[in-house]
Length: 372
Image (cartoon, rainbow, N blue to C red):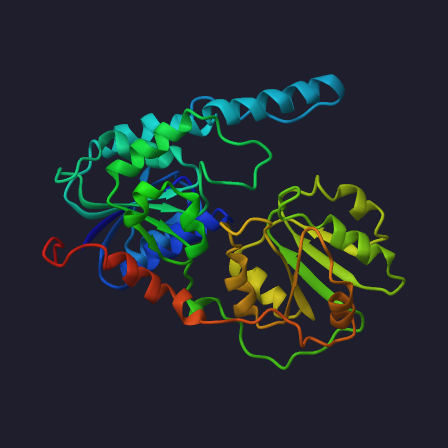
């Protein structure tokens, strides 16, 4: 089968969308399919080309760059406002992906399946401009959506009303819309629910599971969180406030690319909160396997679920799952004492195996249409 993946994020970038695209491309190739990825080129991708035989094509660079959030005082405020509203009103700078994707896909043909990944959603819009059912580009187009667009409730601002027509336009053109969890279905327009298929995030368990070693309990509670924060939705501030009230020593490691939400709390922690930049996924899972426990911050909306739970599962450590708004202090205290009886249960994790996830995508292509 010939498969083309269109994505704004790909290896070696550390992001959920990059992981999704990269793991799918690798597994499709392992299963004997011919895989082409349309994305931004990076020098580190050569190892994938050589090891898996994946063909990577240049998506192209955005002509107009993101507005740099720098400076101080009024200048900084103005930059923040301009960047926020350009992003809100016209999806800047990602809107530039529409002509890039459209132009490059017009040169492609003969694929059994085209998979486009969002966020950002302009990737889907670029595909919609050139895709025709029964056309020469691909037999089937699957629009993979990690998070909703119009139905996203984790942002402080709602999308402008006119994007409703854009979402409905691309949804009419695609053959399938894939989402990672069933609860997200209601974040999409009901008229397209028949196109929705639930396909969770996937990972190669064998590649990423750390070597089994006897766990050595740390002298003080050592725990970590990995991922981004969203103010009022995936917000750690109440949890951290409670931690800072504790007189006991602990080490809370946070792997993130943005600490603006908790910068003041980190400064007041006396070194008990340690912030790290993102590191490669396999290395991160190895480090997490040596923590006493891991922290999951629950989303305030049911239409989104953190993909990091797969990595937490592979790390093999208990997970303290906390609410953004109300902290269960007794549960936190139990974890500090080494009592993990209220740890987040891991259920049905076989479905996250990349072999099963890739098969779910392949099954979307009717056998009579697929090329050998």
